[in-house]
Image (cartoon, rainbow, N blue to C red; front, side, top):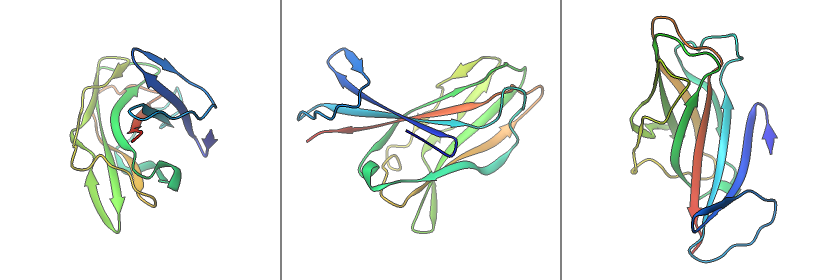
Length: 154
């Protein structure tokens, strides 16, 4: 599924295997997983510092899901650091979804962040934003941020 630069991929985790499919078969205890892919800049552009660089409104189909992972990846690595925060806006109030922000330093990808489990849940109508909190020295280009969300079937 793709809408305005956001890709969403469905996946199901069962035991040690992961399968992506359009089939909807749900089992109690099964963990459903989705990947929300945000292209922040094109491959030749460095990210700039700012809040709400890109975002989306949580639809009813994602109500009750939780943020479970964040991946930042770049097309060309730089010698500087890019710092990324995931922010949730609910009923006019903003909260950071990461207690330790994602940083990409001299690499092509990073998952070096800590999710704030007090703020990891999604509700219909929430706005989820990607904020670039810092960018230093020779920045990487072609930034993409992927959010992993999941929900256990009960």
